[in-house]
Length: 287
Image (cartoon, rainbow, N blue to C red):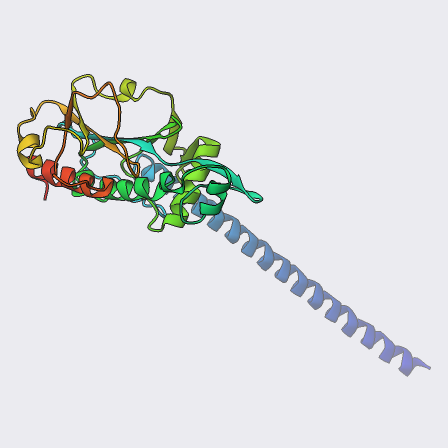
């Protein structure tokens, strides 16, 4: 009777020792988990501090965002600048089917005829090509372009910032113009800066006081060579060029100082602008 009792007592001691070991192991695991959690918290705090420092250092600097290039480094130059005004741009919004669209002669010819409108008058591609010619010019990349103003055939006036990158396809451009005319502004990705915005008429309130305003028309009797004409303009004034962005006709603006023709043949708005930018680049030694 005594021997089984002794055996049972020994077994209990072994079990108690095993339980103690298991408790120690559990405590050790809990301590290691707590240490790991503390380390993770410290790493997160360090990462937040470093990211905060980086954000503070990057404030005030220009970031390159998708679709928007870096602003030219010499944009704030005090030298005379260049301003473009595109008049009578064909950018009319209408509900075609179930959606609103920018009307154009290719896609909406039947719709325009049904509404007794001439499809030849709806050419938003003209202002698209004109903006590409202006914003892609070396004069703009050198920081000498001050602003671009576009006035639609319906009298809506909007401003285009010089550092905007216009989409390379017309379809995307039409989508941006539709959004602009509906929401009145287009904001840069990740910033509050308005790259395109509808503004109040007239455009003259946004033009520099000391500026020379030049209009272009094939029907003008004053035929000039663009290089010589621009070279004769004073170096102390900003130059404002007013170009028509319509398929046919001429601009009628009372704020223009001089009306000139730069070719004996009718030129597209994009080709006219390319000649202007080339002459201005020669005058200001922009290569």
